[in-house]
Image (cartoon, rainbow, N blue to C red; front, side, top):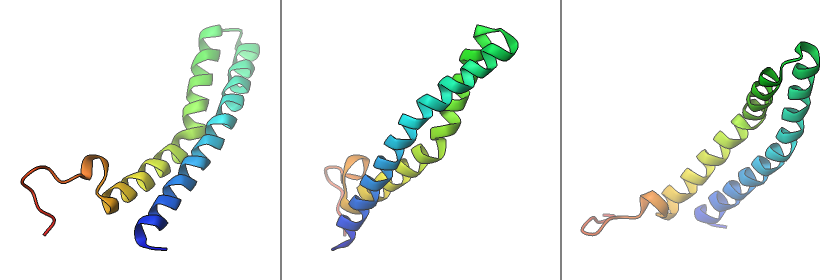
Length: 90
């Protein structure tokens, strides 16, 4: 397996982890919002708690997926790393 395939596999694995974190993040967000709503009887606090809980539950996985994808794109010369016309790799 060459470097591109290894980085592509790492990127796909990081995306899969992010997908799981997002699925569980919704449950965590719902429960956090419900707890805040029931404890302090404020729907605005419940919504804010749900948003913050979802963000916290997925933050590290979103960051890791972005880093893995960026490393793969840089190695493979894809995305924003595609050489522009007139530029050379040499």
